[in-house]
Length: 128
Image 1 (tube, rainbow, N blue to C red):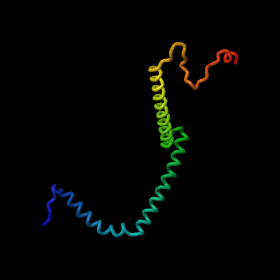
Image 2: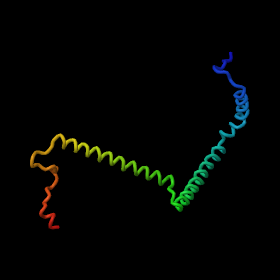
Image 3: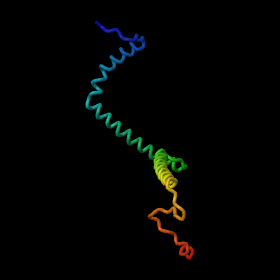
Image 4: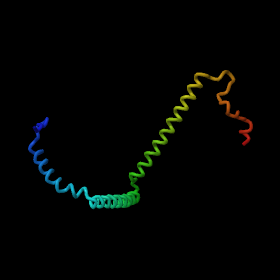
């Protein structure tokens, strides 16, 4: 017993299904052949080569008129992201140090320099 579809099939869909079946039976053996696979791999290789060549030429033309290429914009975007990450790290580090200094302020007569910092000799720095 044939199952009835859950949703009614439109007449246009029925026409498409008949046409697809007629084409598929003739085309399927061709598509599954070794010659087709070889032809497709050559097409892909040629298409890639032509695409790279056109991209290089277009990039050269864009650079001649001082317009950045997609590669230029991508590099700048990556560089900007790296700078943004570094800025975030430095900001967090500065906030951490600032918070620790507010929690532990130096006593009277104490310096805010860290333990690894050398004291500044004002007399010798004025002579330079």
